[in-house]
Length: 491
Image: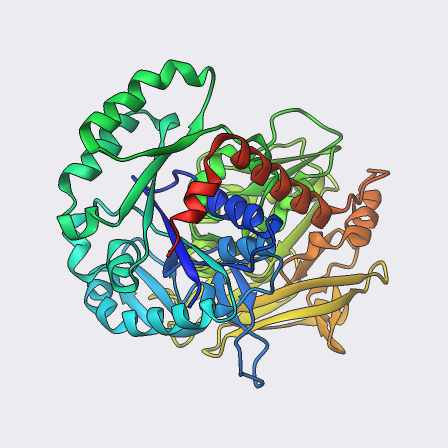
């Protein structure tokens, strides 16, 4: 079995995902065969990964973060890197994905009772991820200090104690209270858990690190833990795909540019990293529009992203008045792209006769495409290679969706996937819908598409930008952390 080290946070959104990705890349640069692992993730930003030994399906779902961490390791993503994925559908319930496949749906309270059964799958995947590797870097979820959930935990100390993996605690100084959060975690953890923590690091520091010397002394006094270093605010992290919707309010690029792209912030927004390649273009400004705010009238393009609850988000879309905004946008000659759930919303109606998404089973669409969608139980999950019909250029991405879409506008497909037409385009060519995530990740297509909107010279090598960002993060961690000590404590 490979050696392993685990990063757990004093809370959510402390930067564990980026730190694990950076440490994975740093380990790879040292010649180590390294793999990422996250026992349980909660995100509607999913990726499609291989299911080893399954030749009947194109793949299974994992968190987008583990997909990025696999890239950092230089290996293909596997469903075993994230054996349990929770995809929130309502405020109190989520779809449960186990080893890439839909396991069922559970309300929050029911899921706590389910965790004991899922630990077997977690440990099975844990064994598979470590095969042939030198090092596995594990990412926790939330905080180990949630002692009210400890008895059934599979994401933090519940996993670490079962797998006997040493833990590095991550504190986020940017949100304040980092001394209390680290010392408080030490105070309330039971001894069995506390003994696994080999030290801590401080993340997201801005300014002169020496100003925190007394803070480090205070933490040592309260905990006795060693500090592996203080990580500055990692600017390169902004060039990496974001996983969690809690960061959406920080994703809009600030400076006005040649093309403004408006993205309505749906309540159950999914796979919003589809917009990252557009954000990376120097001439493009992407604005995520929160509920209660109108879509900007000066946007040249509106992109309706994926959704984990198409009908519910469609109803909220109208409540926000975005249906009127997008109709006005169309009258001004503006362009619209809908991806997956966003594509379904562009039609005349969305029906869910089996109540798969919830109690509301029928909703009027935005009417921008002459199509209609009927939800069906079987889920399509696969990586795809395709071709743009508009520009006759290659596309590459993935599908994760329920539903079948038909109608006259599908006779003008947006792409051909495995010889089959996908999506739809309006008669004037200004409204495009597709089930394929990753549409804008194809550099040549993105360049031509933006050229059709008046932006010349676009089409940067986006994947190379991600690779450079991972290298930059790894270099920063090597400079500010004792990586030798962290890797040396793995067991």
